[in-house]
Image 1 (cartoon, helix red, strand yellow):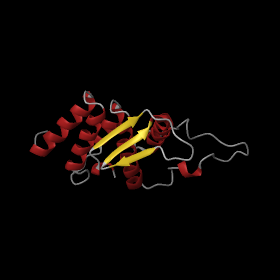
Image 2: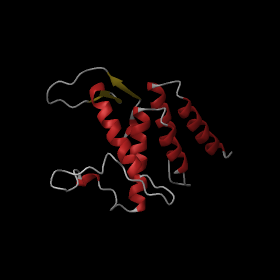
Image 3: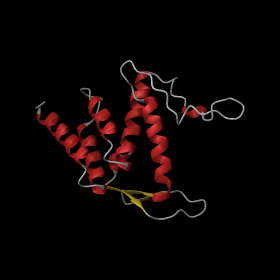
Image 4: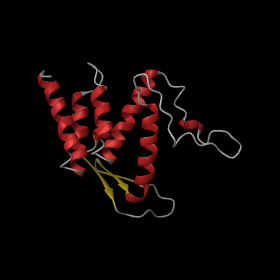
Length: 158
């Protein structure tokens, strides 16, 4: 889980054969730069498909591809069988990953803000997420607005 980390970054190191692009040392997490475009594109596509939308069903062009025999390419990406609670939980996980990779993504921050339910999101974990994003991109205005929102919730001001 990301909330236990002190720092997150993307390192400009090219992968060596058969090595994981994830680096983890002393509560610090990093990804090698070569994997970020693939991870971001996949995560964003899944997020668009799985996030709850009010009365709107969006088809994701990334996930609607079929193989040569007409079957879906990735059955694992079929989110239509998930319950609403599972979809919400998956979307929160994906939005956490997206804001770590790109803290300027307003869509993910807004989803996290709209997902707030009393007892739903933990204040400390959300503030640590913003702090973790700030280690990578300290001047991200979306992170500042999100942090201000949670600070207002903490002191009881709306």
